[in-house]
Amino acid sequence: MDHGPATQESAESPTEQVFPSGTTAVRRHGRTARLRLRPGWALLAVLAVQTALSLRLVRADTAFEDEATYLWAGHLEWAHLLHGTPLPQFPAYFSGAPVLYPPIGALADSVGGLTGARILSLIFMLGATVTLWSTAGRLFGRRAAFFAAALFAALGPTLHLGAFATYDAMSIFLVTLAAWLVVRAGQRQDATAWMIAAGVVLALADATAYTYALFDVVVLLLALVVAYPQPGGKLAAARPLTILTVLAVLLIPAVLIGGSRYMHGIAHTTIFRTAGGDSPLTVLTQSWSWTGIVVITALCGAVFSWVTRPGQLQTWLLTLLAGAALLIPVEQASLRTTASLNKHVDLGVWFAAIAAGYAVDKLVAGAPAGSMRTVTSGACVVALSFPLSVAAAQSKAFATAWPNSTAFIAILRPLVAHTSGPLLVEDPSIAEYYLPAGSQWQRWSGTRNINLPSGAPTGGPSDAAGVLGSGNQGTYTLYIEQNYFSLVALNFADTVALDKSISTALKRNPHYRLPVQVVPYGHTPGTYIIWRYESRP
Image 1 (cartoon, rainbow, N blue to C red):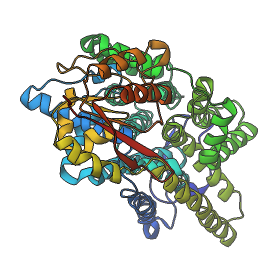
Image 2 (image 1 turned 180 degrees about the vertical axis):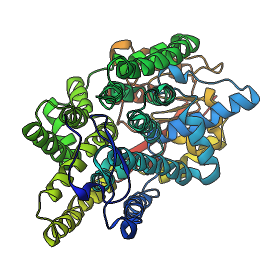
Image 3 (image 1 turned 45 degrees about the vertical axis):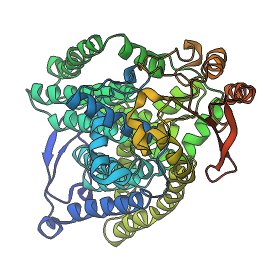
Image 4 (image 1 turned 30 degrees about the vertical axis):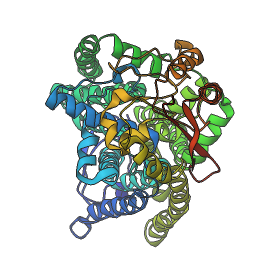
């Protein structure tokens, strides 16, 4: 039976390890007293580097469309809770429950603006690194924990999510917390409380961002594997069943209470997500370029275990952890889309980093004891500078990949302030977030749907087009002929065919001044063209 790593260096500090076999051991080395502080300082060093590299991104650009959408929605959710103001149909097109992350993000935004909301995400990502450290340490020792945490922190997606105000960081932290809870239960005969806690946390993670429910199976299998050989049997099988029961008890009634809008949102943003136009090779190549260093190291750890301990529980666990990194790339390759790929891959890499930490630990342990082992360990630490430099460049590119909206908002602000009528903006979330009139959501329409003064929609894209499809050209033409919009702003980027149709209708209508403004938009050549309605005799 496999009882985990046998090297002294894997557990030089007095730490309890719960190995995949379920055996719990406390190992003490003669140098424990003078090394006791090293693990804590090493973790602080990893967190400090991660914090510094993410903080440099919090002011790199104006709000991304998703950030603006969720923060704006969070403020509206608070207005609804405190004052009973009506809400848009967020559940019908959000890929996470609008009552969870958006209000939390909005609180941070109220305190520190966009920077505050992004720092909240950094706190969640630092939490994920801490849970990784603790989980890997319990499974494979302190040295494996250090390299696992360092590799995860030294990834472009990790650094980017630490400066990106969306639900991703919160959901990732909750999933990793659930994973830590099932590992922390260890060999306990009665782990019911731990599994209930894991189920509650996992349910929150699933509701926060529907996409990450894909990793529920990883957490369930992890709960099963760490319970063998002790307590084993029915007690081990009861652990994932307990988590599943909690998930069902919490999520099924929540969806039923939420009603058809939640069901529609879950179905069309996650389960029946519309396929894109990217090739599977493009999806896999991009994913590899961001996470390859961890994935290949994790696979080496799994292969090493298969060679040295074939078929044993530790080997199956390492295979599970390494394989988790492939879930999102394979899923998005099947959908032929790279949309949000640089965010979604990070959770799978969190699991794979545990196996990667194990692989580096075995590499160091394979060196001759003494100075050679110390040199090998130091060389591995120095080698982290390469993925870290790559991650710094990648995260900077991620954080500046969208147009800067400063000029657009500066020109649109007085135009909106001097009108009280309906507004049509191609992607309205940015303006809704930055402008005071954003709270009057009934006034704002985009090129996917028109909002009427009552707040009722005219009807969005067809189900075949998905929630991000273009609106109906005939509907927009009709409303322009009726002089419905006070301002129209298009950038001919997301819904090009519809934009051209709207532009043609505006040119035919003598009441729209063509154009009132042409606004440079973003780092690459692009413009926002703004029309204004003017009544004429």
